[in-house]
Image 1 (tube, one colour):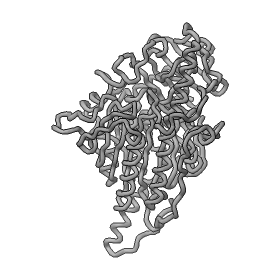
Image 2 (tube, helix red, strand yellow; image 1 turned 135 degrees about the vertical axis):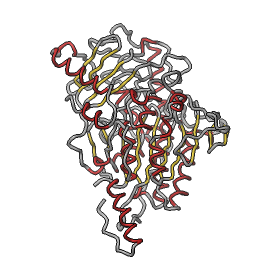
Image 3 (cartoon, rainbow, N blue to C red; image 1 turned 30 degrees about the horizontal axis):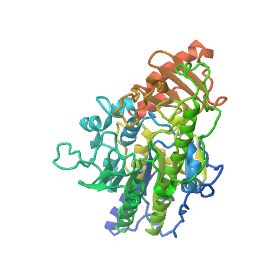
Image 4 (cartoon, rainbow, N blue to C red; image 1 turned 90 degrees about the horizontal axis):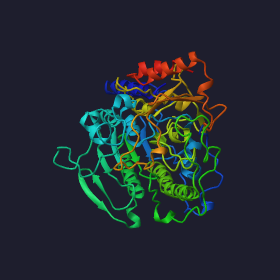
Length: 522
């Protein structure tokens, strides 16, 4: 039974109680769980407080619209999870979606898809800034008037946002309001701008600008973690359901760790996987790419180590927020969701640090859910995408998702039910590489950036069409590292089928049409 159904039952129960009637009985409510090669404490990281479950206090007499804690991390790749003990505990306590896919491996397009529940061809956001992307376009299109935040606020939730919003958003912007702008749908707002250093930044704190400096206590991840904990404890005391998004800048470049983590993990190197410094056979765009130099490899090792260091504060935050939920007596009435806006590569495919490709490193990212009504220690391989978060949040809140959402609620999967008509594929749309030096995701060497492309991803293969007409097909069952482009071995009929399916995905509008398009191929 979905949380939307439970919400309806709760409303009926309230009406019956008001009439003097008795209340009816309530109804009962390729990332696997990570096994690290070495724990963070054994490599020198300060101890991370472990989450401990509070005593159950929830009454079973009424259905629950759970609180929602959404932790969205910036550029977190799968290979960092093994260094995050609190996130691994979240996996053990909850459900991991191994085929979770982002609509574009670029910050703003992905974040717009999360807010709207739509593919980039419907949000209109295909880059981080400029005429076809970024916060300014998102705002000018009126897109902020209908997001998961407005859905939940309308449903009676108290909402809070902390951290990174959309590229081009800056705390001092007024957007014609005469004061620092706060987007619709948020009761509490602590938004940052280009705060990637995690020091020396401004926050828009509910319409007031506060400047933070360079002292250890100013480290941004820690600041928003404390504010989020305060929001949880104060709101929990009122009994009002709440939704909080904590959106960290870590581990985005320059990968600044908290000072207490800056010397941890000495000697750690970037993973030398089968894809490390290797060009895929018959690559459509990497065939002339030179191998990594010795200097590049040394820099990649430093960058990977700093990325691991920088996520230690994120991991502590996850543990601290769960402990706050327990101390506030609402842990068993809360769903905690952990994810990233996109992945990241560090030396795979001869590429220096970056993203934007259709490789698994960049588009298949963590999605871990734990808490109320969520099965523990489960792994789900169904195709779930970031467009599915908004309808899932709505479902948890007991309301219908807007009709223009392209995604669907995966709430049934949280307790083990996979709908028979669930989509079998999703699409990645990368139409405008970050080649502008003003872009925080700018990559100077264009040889490291793929041409614009659309990609069809299923649990077993990835099919890519580039803007220049070239194609790639990777059978991930036999080639999990995507090292052999075998598009040349496919029959013309199969190629036509794939191309038609991809075109259907890149033009669909709404959950019904996009669901049909996503089931048209296997």
